[in-house]
Length: 142
Ligand SMILES: [Zn+2]
Ligand SMILES: [Zn+2]
Image 1: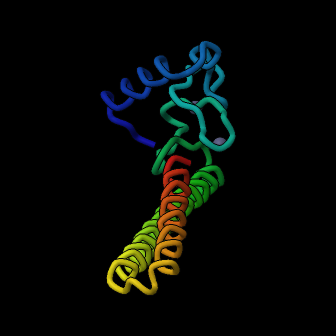
Image 2: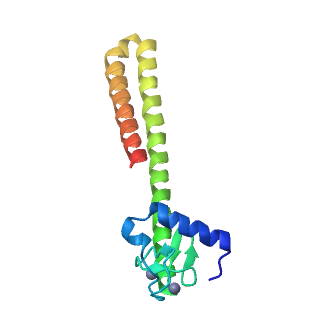
Image 3: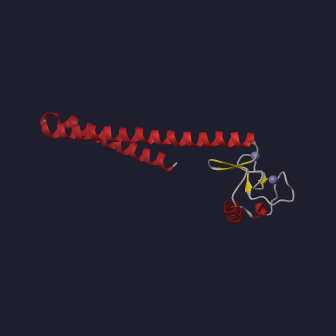
């Protein structure tokens, strides 16, 4: 793996800033005398610029680890998409329940005879929509 010198310096700098003290003095797993500039995302081995392979969201060592990290990244992004889709469903449900609540309230106002049925039903849907909204916010946070 060829890395330009500024990039190598950048990696070393990041390693110094973000790594716990033990990792700063770690040497490359393959070259015991060469200080490591990165840690493999999969097996946590120290890697010198010669041994590391850059992958989407991290650094990996051998070709097997590259594949592993790619798989991990794919899983993470799939989870993110699922969360996004779930939030979208929640938002739609909140909208539908809220619309139902408004419809019942509106009917209650319009048809005086149905008021005793429409207002409680509207209140129930309003409650459900708020409850769903809270659930949606919880999903977003997770
Ligand atoms: Zn590895
Ligand atoms: Zn090495």
